[in-house]
Image 1 (cartoon, rainbow, N blue to C red):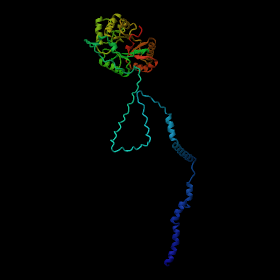
Image 2 (image 1 turned 120 degrees about the vertical axis):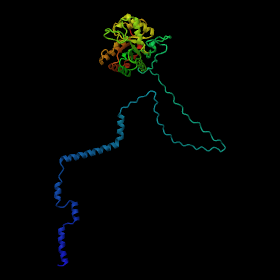
Image 3 (image 1 turned 60 degrees about the horizontal axis):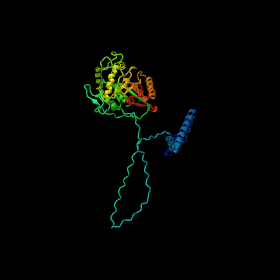
Image 4 (image 1 turned 180 degrees about the horizontal axis):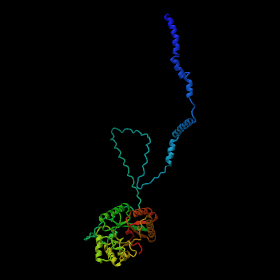
Length: 420
């Protein structure tokens, strides 16, 4: 068999074995696959479940909503921002003495500047115009301000020359040769023209505890009068700090209580069993422990202050030294204030002990009673101790006192104002 015949037999078989060409198969796959694969594809394309359809619908709604919101903001964003800012409440507070804001200067208007002809060559050059100096702004008109009682006041530094005498017990107060008296010179100023009812609050027993005393100095307003015990550690330092903050200061002199000696008032207390000379020595021991106080009081002398024979020499000493007396009325039958008034010594009476009961409600009730007494009599005095609850209730009470038409004052501002 020749080669041509052999090739003729092989070509048909090769075409049958090879089947459709590669290009044809690719075309069929692009068009949808071979006829054998089409049924399999149709079997795999199952319809979507109802849940899938709902999820696709929700997604489409979300996309459409976000797109609509973005378009609306793009068109109305500026108006919305202005409305939102306008809805925010604003308060403008005028600060006293502050300069009003200077409005921005308007841009200068365009103007045609005429061209001046050049001067002749023979003429001397013109002198430059003098610089324009802006006139200084007029001074601000400051309206007279009322005295703010609770602001710190600089008290007269102590000791004042002429108001002190040296002794073996330390510097003692005295009346100056020109008639000035310590209770007036060392007092915290208060305007005499203020006709409102007055209340003085005196916190005694200051200096016994350094922590309590420091807390009182930190938290109490300067209109509160502070009475220090003479045997406190660093008493002169405490008194100086108190006066530096504007507090009027007294001495709380230890005196004999009813249950003495079971209740001991401390060293060098004034006792009814001692002769007047011995009590005067003890009194000078107390008076020489500090300087700058306006007078004395006592929260312990329930027995001593009820004894006229024991109190009379003390009142005489206060008159000779130009000091005032605050009768704390540790005993309702105390005669200290009455004898001081009869001797011409400036005096005041404690109308209420504000913290005998340390509950908040009880302290508030005592402070309210002081208001009623002040409105009825023109003046009232409350006395207490520097307990944290006492300080807290005093500060809260003071916040609305001026609105109720009552002035909080140092104890010297109520001297001789109270009825017997």
